[in-house]
Amino acid sequence: MSEEGYFRHAEAVMGTVVSFLLAEDGLAFTEVLAATEKAAAELHRLDQIFSLWREDSPMWRLRAGSLAAEELPPEIPAVLALCAEVREETGGNFDPWALPGGLDPTGLVKGWAIERVGALLQGAGIPAGIVNGGGDMTAFGRPPAGPAWQVGIQHPWRRERLACVVGLAPGQSLATSGRYERGEHLFTPLPAAGSVRTASVSVVGPSLARSDAYATALSVAAAPASLAKMLPAGYESYIVFEDGAEEATTGFPFADPPPDGDDNRGTPLHP
Image (cartoon, rainbow, N blue to C red; front, top):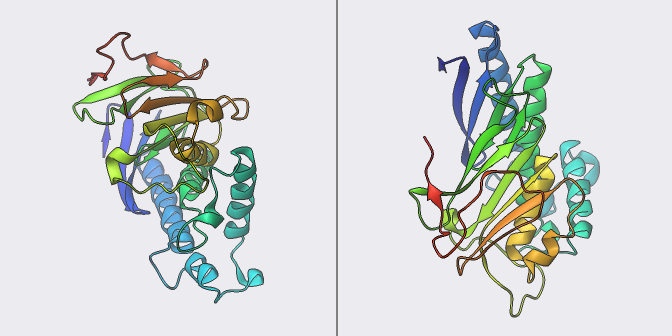
């Protein structure tokens, strides 16, 4: 679908819907369509590799012990190496090896895949756009209307409102993790007695794979606000706690911060 200088497409893949908002900027419709189809095909290819719902996927077979390391497609060792780095950076709060049922890199791989297809679209000549998979998104190029993409973060329990609006600069990513969409699906790999529960965690940074994993780690950490201050340079977080409190690191790129005071339960949805 093409309108107002943008090409829009939605693709059901990886257990969610991945949406494309791409600036045409003088490109022929057929060029943008071909790039989008190539990006969508790559998402399906990666889903076939990493799916834990398909018994023929290499990731499922690795976890089941029926695929040797030398038989793995190169994408799996690359993702697992990144998972190991993030496990160390988060003090074990992100740990795909500690999940029930066995090795599960789901908390990172969707962001990694979306980041990958964003680079693919740029390489195909698309000047600017956003790829968004269920709230995990990567932005590239400058939007025609300003220096940053205006992106809303869904409020955790007031579905008609946004928690805030983020100004996502070119080359930045945004990942959001929370219990409000999928219920109690987050697993805590470390003892978390007395932990403060989060309702929604958003992380902005240069890599969507890392932002995705950091958001997962902060969602289950016993002290998420403390862990947020220990994230690598270039990553910022915004946390909504279950008691309604909100906390953001100093560099989080609010375009429209939540209001102060008692009524800080989300700003009205923007047009």
